[in-house]
Length: 427
Ligand code: AMP
Ligand code: GLY
Image (cartoon, rainbow, N blue to C red; front, top):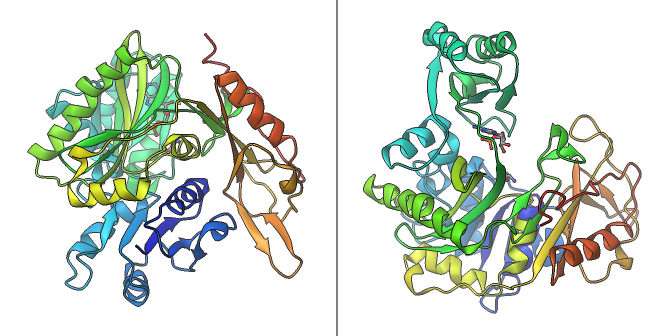
């Protein structure tokens, strides 16, 4: 099979790395990819939302399957575009149509969906500019902290958690009236604050059946002990020690099955990943958010634990054959540490030479913001998140130790990483 992967981060490198191991894979292309995906496939300079350009490429290279990394092409309807095209309708797209992608594309849709199907989530109300006064009143009647969420996609920045009532009111106004997040904040969800520990759970579904992937914990804040600004993710660990079989059972029964049942009842034919962003409150799981794709940096710890041929599983998902599919999982832990550019997630410099790659041992290096300087035969930083180092271990501690040993081998000016991954999981 010829495969086209869309995206350019560590997640896409992990997908390309895994799919390249399938005996069924012939050509693997990544649009636009990075210096890491270029090691396992061929990068092509196509924007993942330029569906017309993609169509030409798919026809020319006889692509059989498109694996969509990030959410934007899905929310913009890449699956609809291909399935409505007479020539392209047989190309398998791993990812939902634009209706299914609303689970991530509209927080209001996701909350309403959970309400309709009795899926545990924080209590909430949705407001628009017209109902600003009611929104302010609502804030007055609930306690701090106040959780404000822009309805639409806001590059991971649309969630505000605020302790002060006046500040919360001002932010609500700025989102609804001054369009702080553009169209994405035309509607704002105000929801109950949940106190607990988060985890990420993933399934691949064919719309009726699903396979459960290994769960993971990601680390979102830039600073040690989960302090400082939110980032795209500073690393991840899989499995999650507190997610024992009893708790995972609750997640399947109370969240995963009602979600897939709900999609079916609503006539949404969902083929692809569902990423459940969950929080454990007491002994109960609640949904914080849905995503319509794999997580990043979770993919960098989850995908290396899948022993089965992922390409075959993608085919089963596309064809509606997941009922018979068994996923073979590596029992070992994986820990994945993200190295970032100094200054990230605020401003940072690019173009720093990366040294020490040949010293890596017993790890997988998934590249995120790295480019090849062909003229000087050097590889250089080209983004905030630079690379994730993933290692295995029989225990979480040994996986972390192996990963950190390798992280220390890599050098670039301004290199930063968190030293404390797993701090909240020690038992
Ligand atoms: P989201 O973009 O919905 O994942 O939200 C970003 C982050 O905000 C989540 O990963 C949580 O850490 C936090 N968060 C979102 N909603 C809530 C909530 N209702 N209670 C507590 N924390 C939340
Ligand atoms: N790790 C969170 C995300 O991919 O959105």
